Every structure is written in structure tokens, then in C-alpha cells.
Image (cartoon, rainbow, N blue to C red; front, side, top):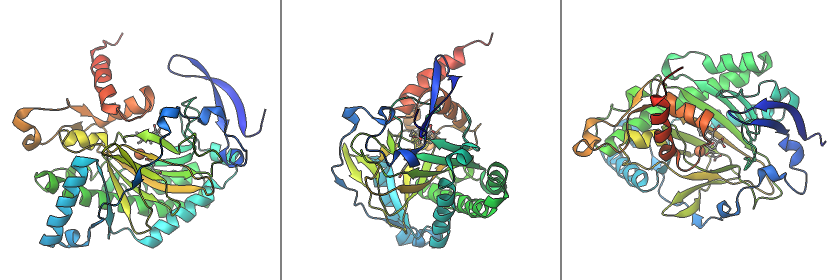
Amino acid sequence: MSSSALLLLPCMGPKVKNTVHLFDLNKLQRQANIPTQFMWPKEDMVGNDGVFDEPLIDLEGFIKGDEAATAKAVELVRTACTNHGFFQVTNHGVDADLIQAAYREIDAIFELPFDKKLSFEQKRGGQEGFSSAHADRFSTSLPWKETISFRHRGMNSDSDVLDYFTSALGHDFENAGRVYQKYCEKMTELTLIIMELLALSLGVDRSYYRKFFEDGSSTMRCNYYPMCKNPGVTFGTGPHCDPNSITIVHQDQVGGLEILASDKWLAVPPRQDVLAINIGDTFMAFSNGIYKSCIHRAMVNEERGRRSLVCFVSPKEDMVVKPPEDLALGSIRVYPDFTWSSLLDFTTNHRRTDTHNLKNFFPWLVSSQSKVPT
Ligand SMILES: C=C1C[C@]23C[C@H]1CC[C@H]2[C@]1(C)CCC[C@@](C)(C(=O)O)[C@H]1[C@@H]3C(=O)O
Ligand SMILES: O=C(O)CCC(=O)C(=O)O
Ligand SMILES: [Fe+2]
């Protein structure tokens, strides 16, 4: 057996008995051919059709309360979110040095020996820890990436991220913990600004959405996509919609994020000063289906490893997701009420996230609610 694909003890999946493989991508990236488990269906492997070049949204004027700048930002957000659910912001208040520090700290962690990374491996059904290709959860169409995830509980948490780093990785990673504590706090601040912009763009009260996110339950995820010798057969992250509310993404200079707009895959050129915002399934429901959950994917690169910093923003788990009255057009509701915790349970434990999460989620929710406990 090769040392980069270790065979471990069998583990129980929901119904079938699986054998879990662990893949050390830092070793595999040097081999000429990737393991078959990483190969995606041929029909998914379509190239892009061009470059995403819609205007960047400058948040400076909006944050300062400038009326003309606000009207411009609101209009750009409305157009982007009704068309495809993706826009990019500048002057967002997240310091360039903080972003660079976040990459430096996470690089050091991804460079740790594989065994050390496995010591804080993400548990089944859990949201935090290291994952290599999600190979403990899936056995086909594996993503060519390593991830490290951790939770942040919004404005009322003092040191949750720092505590995670010191307890899971040890005191040597205290500085990494401080950097990511700050990064996550900045993500919460930006979330509240974006929520106001989204509310104005939908014509509802400015503060309507932001209050749900002050004490939300976001997950921060750092992605490392090693170089890949067979870029035409696999994805870093396959085509999907994010199930959460909005996602705030910083990609490094390698590039690879692509979005689907008017049935065309468009490559998003990387820019150090820009943060990308995706509308996710939960915000689509919050807007009564007016805003689209963005279909997107992350490509691998044949020559260089790529990193991205992703904040999956969500409201508190038990909050009932429903649109404001003003958007329930003539009281027509596109989606039934649900809680973020039930959608999270569905995407984590029942069905792999793809481009049709809500379509699959609601029948499951109805059937799981009608089951009488024995
Ligand atoms: C609730 C979640 C499931 C995923 C992590 C968060 C938000 C996005 C989801 C994901 C990134 C979408 C693509 C597939 C996935 C398996 C991945 O490649 O990481 C998804 C995440 C997951 O299930 O861990
Ligand atoms: O790496 C990226 O650019 C995006 C990753 C992504 O879409 C995700 O983690 O959900
Ligand atoms: Fe995503």
C-alpha cells in the first residue's frame, strides 16, 4: 500500500459499511496520475466561457452614509443578486495585512506533517477541524483539497476561535488563533454591512436582516488546493450552491473561483483588495426566491497550489428562516419555513451539497418531520 493512501479501519456510514481511505495530497501531487476516487463525471468537466467582469462594489461611500454611493451600490447588488447571486466588494474594512497574516498562519498549518493534521481531524457530522478531500465522508468525486474549519459565534463571543486553535492545535498556534479571531470578527462586521445593503436592495427595512446575524453561527474555512497534474478530470470544489446565507471569499493570486451566470461558467480574476460575496440557499429563502443562490466551483491549477479563505455566514441555528412580509408577494411563499440547523443537518449528514440543495431538502424535511419517534 502506498504511504499516501493509507487504508484505515472500516467505518460505518449511515447504511453501508465503508472502508475509509486517507489521502495525503502533498504526496499525491507529485504523482503523474491522480487516484480514480478524485475523478469527476465527464459531463461536469466543462471549461469556462470567459471572465467575470461586472463592476466592483466600492463600500466606502455606503459605509460613510453617502447617498449617491449608496444608491449605486444598492443598484449593483440588486442586479447581481437577481441574475446570478454573486458580487465583489472593495474598501470593505478588512485590512490587507490581516489577510496576508491569515494566509501566512494557515500555510504553516497546511505544511505540518500529515499525522499532526490528522490529530485535529474533522469529526463525522462535525463542523470543525482538518479534512483531507472529505475522504472520510465520500468515496467518489472527491475534491482535490485540504480544509481547516472552525466556528465563530458573532459579536457576543470573545475568544471562541482563539480557544479552538489552542485546544485543538496546541499553544504553538496561539498567534494563528489570534489572527483568525480578528479575521472572523471582521467577517461579522462586514456581514452586518452586507445585510443592510441586501435589505435596501430588496426594498425592506435596512435593519431587517442584520439583526439575525449579530449572534450568528458562522463557519470559517481555509482551503488549500495543492497543485494537480490532471486538472481536466477533477475539481478543487465541484459545482455547488452554498447552503448557508452568504459566503465571503478571499482567493489568493493563483485564481480558480468560477461562477455560473446566464448558463456560462465565468472565471473570477483574483484581486488582493477584493472580497467576493455569494448568495447562499438560506438567503435565497430569506428573499422569497428573488435573489439567486450562486452556482460556483473552484478549479485546481497544474503548476501552483492555491488557497482561499471562506466565511460561511449563517444565522443562529434555531432561527426560523422566512422572508419579511413585504416580500411574500400577495402572501405567496416560494419556500416553507425551516431552521438553519435542519438544513445544516441535511447537508452535513444526509446529502452531499450540490447545485439543488433546497429542491432535495424540503421533501426530506417533510418526511423527517412526519416520522414518529419510536
Ligand atoms: C454546510 C456546509 C457544507 C459545505 C461546507 C458548508 C458550506 C458549503 C458546503 C460545501 C463547501 C459545498 C461543496 C461541497 C462540500 C462537500 C465541499 O467540497 O467542501 C461542502 C461542504 C461540506 O459538506 O463540508
Ligand atoms: O475556493 C474557492 O474559491 C471557493 C470555495 C467554495 O466555494 C466553498 O468552499 O464553498
Ligand atoms: Fe462554495
